[in-house]
Amino acid sequence: MKSLLLYNWEVREDYYRLFEGLPIEELVKDRHAGQGSILQTLVHIIDVEYSWMCALMGKPEIQFDVAEYGDLPSLVALSNRLRAEIREDLNKVEMSSLEHEYVTPPWMTQTFSTTEILKHMIIHEIHHAGQLSLWARELGIAPPSTNFIGRDFKNS
Image 1: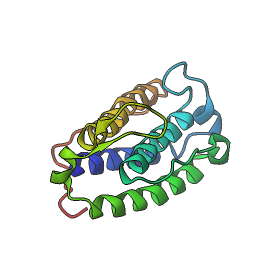
Image 2: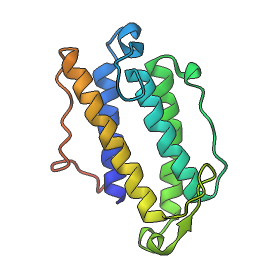
Image 3: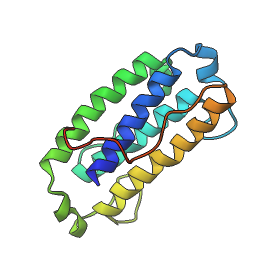
Image 4: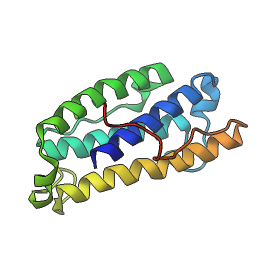
């Protein structure tokens, strides 16, 4: 499962590079899907991943103000900072033992297995990567490859 999280991070980095040359107007333009705009969707991806990871680790949930991340460089900086924390947390956990642990996220009343949460986190980002891909094509930009095969996560 760790390799799929690493895959998501790598594809997200590909999208950051892809969109870095776009004018801010294109990044914040309402696209009538996802979370509205490219920038809002990227903030949402980061927020959801971090919120679920906090739930898994028993940490308090942090609300992100989209207005604080009104451009791609500040969003990339946030993503990198949170990714370092998530990576550290994941390194503390024995992935095979997660199957028998359960968590009730602070924003819900339902309880979920930790593996179910990790799978949700992974699939959630893949879903939004599809939206980013469509928007890239609408802008006349070839989206990055989403192939899992050929990516090397052994050294990550």
